[in-house]
Amino acid sequence: MNVRRAIVTGGSAGIGAALCRQLLAAGYEVISLARRAPVAPTDRLTSIEIDLTDAEATRRVVFDLARERPATTIVHNAGAVREKEVQDATLEDLEALTHLHLAAPLALLQANLPQMKAEHYGRVVLVSSRAVLGLAKRTAYSATKAGMLGMARTWALELGPYGITTNVVAPGPIAETEVFEQIIPKDSPKLPGIVQSVPVRRLGKPDDVARAVMFFVAPESGFITGQTLFVCGGTSVGSIVY
Image 1 (cartoon, rainbow, N blue to C red):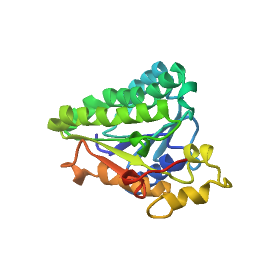
Image 2: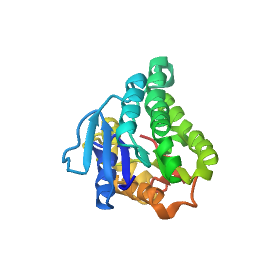
Image 3: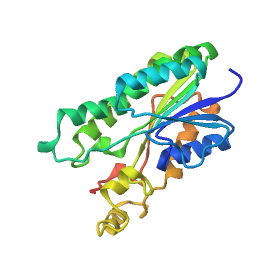
């Protein structure tokens, strides 16, 4: 494969859109898998609209895609929270987020693994969350996002001999993202307190997370695998409530 091709899930907005911009700037061809199209598609950015909580449809689409346009870089960024107190969490919540956070990246890797092995090169980055350390009202979210860490470490061990690395980026509170603003709107009276609880005294931005992902996907980062990088303003060494 002559062109370096990347697949980004959730590439239509927020962190995913920032990732697409930075990958395009680095010369990649990018395919976005998301519920809606990116705001500004280009000749090197293809959008496929899909609901990644539908496991069967996801596998069908990604395997069809891999037969025509295999990728050696995968960034699974799409996510959803389903904020609920523990007594209100449902099996449907857990199932939907398991499909989104765990089954979708598994399908993406399995579909594109033959190409990665053939090239003896691959970069896989899973975008998890600081919530893996615990956050109220996140039963299904924190559990499935934590599952990404174990999955990445396992893939790192299995795939390292083939030149394929797998790493995790775990964002903290990131402004200008649908996930954060659904819980804390821009005009929320809670916002100043949240900012003050972040050691660096600001919210993150999508580009902060995208830069960390770009570090892991770089061809020069081949000696780094199985790692989790918290991009959280320091909240992973303290506590945060929102």
